[in-house]
Image: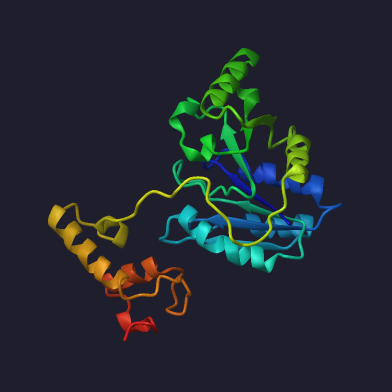
Length: 261
């Protein structure tokens, strides 16, 4: 199975490109699509209805969507072993987090009007293919300058100019997907480490206060040592960290985790 991660900032045209890619691939290959978002989306229903392929929706809620995506990837791979290609679209909120993996193909959909590519982190610099969208908004000379700047920060990337309305470039992206290597197991390696999440705000503190933030961090650290950090979901939350935040907010008793005695 080939595993494809499609990332990009909100409004860059990820989902529009995904639809054209699915249209190019679905007749000859068995596809599955996973849509990750923060709070809500109906894109999964539309894609399932139009293209008649298996689709799953995952909402991160209070979690970082890219951290949540990385947590869910092994489950998705195990559930789609009978497919030829698993396409995963991330929420794309963080330029630093995007969870490309060494064993798959990472595609960054990059809005040409979004500014200098040097401002971007691993969401661009670690991509295998950069799909440059909305090129019709600027001149040919400006497009060439933009392409050069993209290659300055990611010199090994394949560049494809795409248009989510017309489908331009989707065939080239689909061909790159066909050539991607197959993954051998659900044990994958991130291309870039995620940012550290070790302060009181990461455990849900809302007060702008050194003391309150430090106290919240210590309370969260204490609970972190008690939970199994398996993200098993038996407490009713997506991850152990989300459960810890709920305990600290007094929304749930700590003993709702079956591992806390």
